[in-house]
Length: 161
Image 1 (cartoon, rainbow, N blue to C red):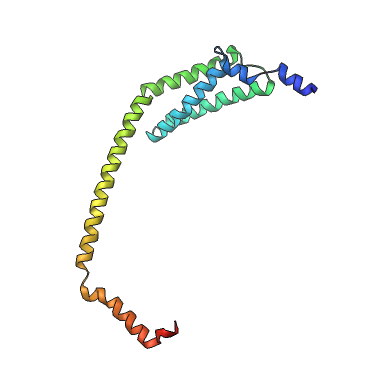
Image 2: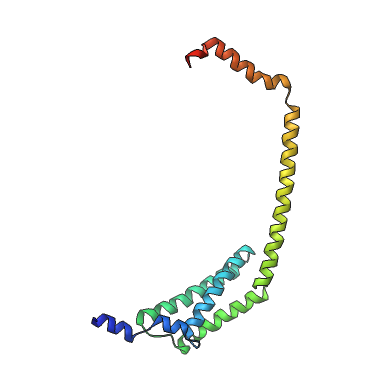
């Protein structure tokens, strides 16, 4: 073993810290994961201000975690208390805005159904327009392309090609 490895072993063990049930680091990481999902939902709901607030708090929490990892010591409750409280407040607001899973699943199902209905309507219109176009093209105009090709080949002797 080298001295460097011994120092790392004595310092912060991220795996142990994340597996500990009373870990502040674990709580902060869990909040960050949930907040990232809510950022996506907030953007889809066009709530850009709330998405920005969540993103800013995610950055603050990530900086705290990064600093703890750099100094190789676990986060203390005192230094992470405000970050955890601020994030918890934002997560509560997300819940009040109905950004929870069940509500979002119902919204997405409704969106999917509406999009499928639009797709069916567009498909029907497309086939009707195609049929109308086919019926409306005069036969003489349709045959014009064939006649022009035949005349062109006759003039330039298509046997060369």
